[in-house]
Length: 433
Image 1 (cartoon, rainbow, N blue to C red):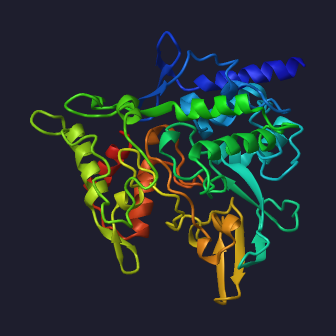
Image 2 (image 1 turned 90 degrees about the vertical axis):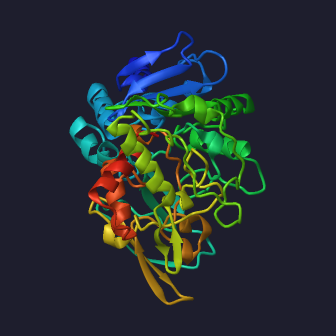
Image 3 (image 1 turned 30 degrees about the vertical axis):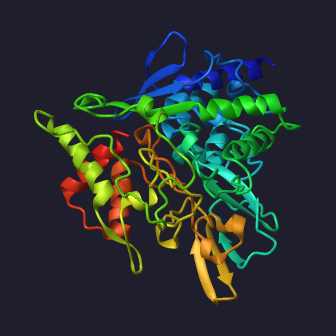
């Protein structure tokens, strides 16, 4: 009992592993430092009670809460530096470290700190959680082989993949829940989708013996839907609200949204998705402000070949106004899971599609593990871009260590041809969101 109490408290303390830069008297405005500067979260509703509110309360059997993997100081996800701190301070016993999904293999030997470091290496180094899902019964593909660097015991009909926890903030703008959209149901509302996700996470990640009651589920969803996070200061610029800037979560929280608000397949699509820093760099604005403004312009307007015969911009996929996720539930591929980009610490799956006689290799089948379609292999949802600087590494598999790496990946994959200055400007813009 003593260990459980101690390490549950360590899990609560993990909310503040990054330096707390400010907090209002109610606790509903939180500011933290990140590699770019300072970001802020505003939370609607009554004053927070971190040990009592449903999002922060243990609802299962293994000591985990929603906040175990969705940490305020990490932009409401988790980052490797703080994961490693939690491991060190708890000797690997923080509730984050559980073998049901935190270890590379299910039930891995974590009986000592040294063994636990090996068992949880993907979580420690990349911030990845293991997701185990069945291959759909009517799948168009056949799993031919798995190159598994951990030699996990195979479960017939199932695949284990490794993914970053998505941030539990700015969910007002969601069009799809989870990287593969498996908690998205077209016949119901996003609130209902998030409610089902909360139930499944409690039963799965927290290993609850029963589903949480409806009051608890509603409280979790209300917290998630009322929480907004964005960058408020960057180095060399200061406040992102000066000189006509519209940075920070307050402006974000007021943005309208509905599914399809800026769908690129309809005629009213507006590629000017971000309009936060249009005034930066004008008149006496600093050079750093000008760089952010140029980056925003590049994001909105720089055209490249997005697919054979189709020209696009960054804003074509990240098209929700001033949020940057996709405004409809669509899974897309940018090649991150392609065999060419696979690193040796991730598995490689080989699939065969009889209808097309194709053999496809991927480190994660993505949406195809839900839809069963060959065309969906390697496809994932488009995540929101706000508070991006808080939550490296990037992409579903944590393969991009920094925003520089993200920009380099896109430039190489789509052969955009960005100059050194344009890359610098894009990074400055993305780090200001």
